[in-house]
Image 1 (cartoon, rainbow over the protein chains, first blue to last red):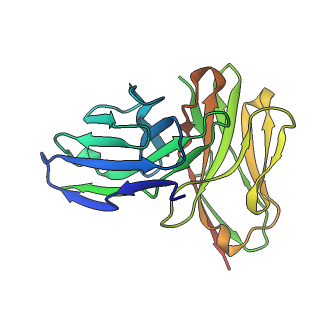
Image 2: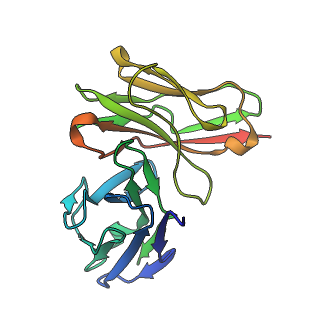
Image 3: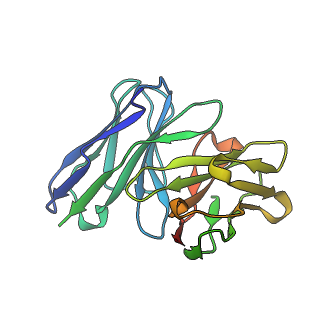
Length: 112
Length: 114
């Protein structure tokens, strides 16, 4: 199993540009999550999807949209990037009964 | 909403020293508790977790944590650290009533000097 994969690994955007971060998991997990990691603030939940076809806002959803394309894939879109969105983005999926989240390798995004 | 506090932002140790990282959370109900580790340049990995039962839980790589319900704490310990334990450590809480949503602490960067 590849686990949780994310693309791209690195990205530089200019203010106002848009992009989509891709996430896929091959563990047949129902729930998937998007976090951003900023120094000293830990990980903060942006959006999550409890199951295929559902999405909900997390702690910091402003400026982002998500799509749960199918059970495997959960994408995060920045419609108009801002410097405040410079961060490392992690996708995770969960094995429902244990609550243990499995994380992807992250995408380092810089918005200039 | 729940919150998680990690008291130390940075810790510097020598090899063979003992490590204890503090974690306190604010939430009145029952919770699942986790410690994750992030080695330099890598993604988060689960160190250990507590759901119920024995409040002293053992994880990978010699780490353990103790849940003290009365203090809303879940401190992480390791008796003797190695250089390879250099990493950032995150405490996380998931209220049982909130499904599997995690709230993370701000993290503690640990540097172990050889």
